[in-house]
Length: 154
Image (cartoon, rainbow, N blue to C red; front, side, top):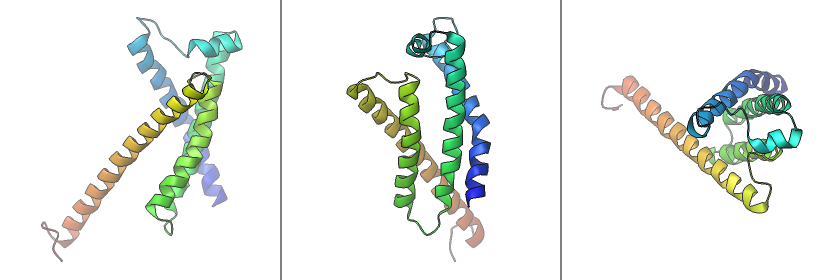
């Protein structure tokens, strides 16, 4: 099990960096006014150098990818209920995401900033979870229809 968690974590590093990079491209497209904005101005000000800010952010994107990848093992705990899996997974990824978001200045450094960022994170998590749940349910229904005939009869 430990080996699987480590392997999943390692496999998550590059996707984490790639997703982070794509987010900066999308953010620049939306708010950059024709310029590439590699990270938030607060992070650049905190480290006093744009290159160092980008390097730090890239490192943390890798950590996020590793954390989400390693935590994905939760979904294989067959004896756990879906509610327990979801709760534990959400708790783990929240404990990874929130400190990183704070350090990288993705949130305002106040209680309101923390709570609003956490709320947005929770809403995005819930939306992705719902999409995955509905997709999985559809795939099971489709598989059952294929196994038992087109009407799903036994």
